[in-house]
Length: 450
Ligand SMILES: C[S@@+](CC[C@H](N)C(=O)[O-])C[C@H]1O[C@@H](n2cnc3c(N)ncnc32)[C@H](O)[C@@H]1O
Image (tube, rainbow, N blue to C red; front, side):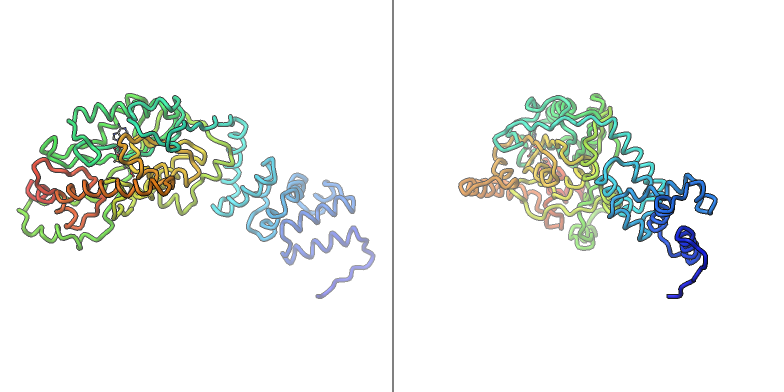
């Protein structure tokens, strides 16, 4: 390495000259600069004023440059490597603990945040922390199956007012599915409204209700499709719960060219075509008011990654429905509640499914470190729920199998009615789209001849 010899220069001046040379070569990183400034000040006794005169920048910027040495080692390494700037470092120093500084440094790198943006977010984080009131401990009422009540959700008195943070569910149609009595539309509305009233009572202010509400494509109650979403909107509005977003669950990810029913379309009277029913709307409602936020630790743990945000904020979710029944005719694919729970709740929140079915929402919520509670009034699904939640022992396994066989038998007779649809390439998930015709015609016949 070439070495420059300066005569009549003391150590104090030599330190400065070596700095100048290195800066000319531009090979000092911010941490080395900060270390140099500290040596100049503390070892060689330069005042800030003297350093300013020697060209180290303003007194304020010299102090700031030195300050970054207070960051934890792992964060300093990132500054040294040029992954974080001094400005990032200074914002990180506003955080009170080194753990928080490390956590935020990680987030800045993961999300590629500019110093300005990081500064803004850190300020918001700090001010929230000051206002933060520890959210109430979640209380899960005891049920025979932990968190599950085998009873009608028109009465959810086990749950306290404003105790549930998120509701994820798919209401019944009550038009004669396996689990349904086939009651009148008016009675159905009355029942649903009673459940929604209870949901509104238990939901926290600012809490979300994500409902998969399919329209009714049947001749059961009318000659036309019965739209449902706007009815839920009206009923929930009465409780200060408002529609905020709609997601389309695109169900048939199989290409339409493989569907026999579409090939048979040649026989359909021109202008009488029927659009394939391969989607369901998911309505996102929010209750008015501001919800309490949990600890910053939980907020950070619940954050979606950039990739997840891009995927989940797309208005169309392509998720395959289940290909096999799991002891219940309308089981959601787990991916559906998983996305909704990740998107609209924090870890540690309480999630409710008032129409629990096979317990998919509860299972997924537990897996995502949330608490969960569900209501299902049909006792025959108890073993199915227990199986799903991993609560079955040897004896009840047998019970599960028996119930499943029974339910499969029931489903078979239903499927015969719907054969046209399945043969036509629709998956079983589609059968849940409330297409049971009143007059025995298969849905496809119904579709084509309407
Ligand atoms: C569409 S299914 C839900 C399926 C569920 N998403 C799953 O993945 O398994 C609706 C369920 O609500 C139940 N149900 C209908 N009305 C109810 C009520 N008032 N209280 C409790 N459960 C009810 C039905 O028995 C049915 O199992």
